[in-house]
Image (cartoon, rainbow, N blue to C red; front, side):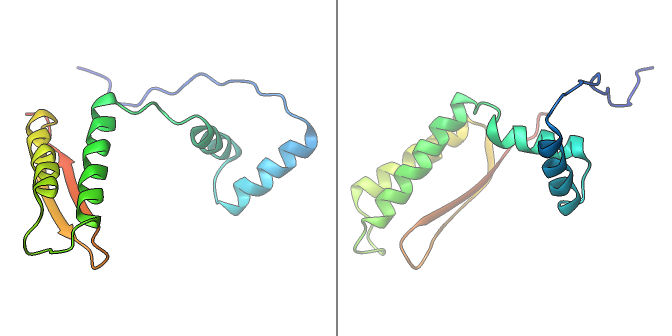
Length: 121
């Protein structure tokens, strides 16, 4: 039988000047969380987890589709560039194992792409 309780990280003693501690405490109270949660949240903002290179490529493809749609003058007859950008994104859905892909074009001509990763089988 495996233990399903989450493992807690060992405590880490942190020394900080009293005035900084007071500011962290005030911010934690304003955000309705513990000082530890406030510090972790602030550190996560400052030091975000690295992005998987596959997702960087996907973001590049989404940006290319947005740029192509933004330059379209005739939405009913998209240019070869727009079709190519969308096709590259669609092709990537197989590589990235994406599911539930939805593409909508806003009034301003920006493509909104929504997708989710397929769950492991």
